[in-house]
Image (cartoon, rainbow, N blue to C red; front, side, top):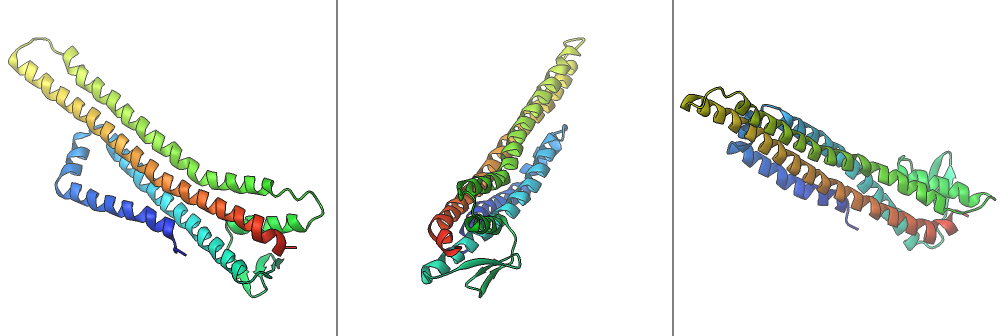
Length: 239
């Protein structure tokens, strides 16, 4: 069993990105990026990216921990085919010597599965799997929304930059050397805003897409393992 495999797979590329960011700061690229962007959209994109990455890290650990738990439960059933699982005092007991006290999506699903499996009503547990799948999808939705928002913020910066770049042309009264030079200086500042905000939005959006792809892959792994548990082991063990 690979302990926290999906979490480590997320951490490795992001650790490399941290070293790249340190190198970019050391060689002055990040200072140039933020100092030349007078719209401060690049700074806003960086702040949003940082806090969203922390959110993704927390959710990745949350999902990875449940994958480890499902692996542990599966190993118990494999090692002992007579394993029984019950709910005792709102806690999940496996053979009465292993208790699941942690509360997460997996344990909530197992509790609901046991209650439904022991009831006399229709035992269509696919409804529970659908609800479980919806919960896992909810962990990823915000990442897609924010990554798309970073792309749009980059485009907003592009528009602002081009407006600032074209504005000096309309203010030229005479085409002498000094006026042209001042206009070109102002135009270069607007072009810097357009290019740097576009670059920040593209890089931030793509990196967030990558992070939440890893999270989505981990969520799919958890769903598949939970489906296997319920179909092969829990149905028999909870009766």
